[in-house]
Amino acid sequence: DCTSAMTGYTCTGLTPDICSETCGDSTVTFTEQCDDTNSSPNDGCSSTCQEELGWDCSTGTCVEICGDGLIVGGENCDDGN
Figure 1 (cartoon, rainbow, N blue to C red):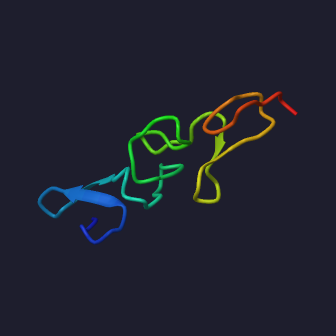
Figure 2: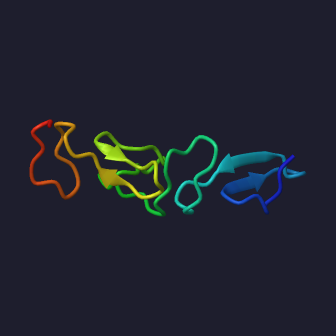
């Protein structure tokens, strides 16, 4: 069972017994890699709350990975070293 009081989840059903994660609520839950409160692409955290290629969201804030050979976000260049 789950309740609507469970942070980061939306619950429905009679008990309620059907729960799903709420992407975009700033709470990183079980299958989410990040949650930056928006559904904008190319900012490190996708609209499905997954870390985007070229970004590191492990600290709670998504930052560009310098030296990975990918130009993302505010990077002007990235030569891979």
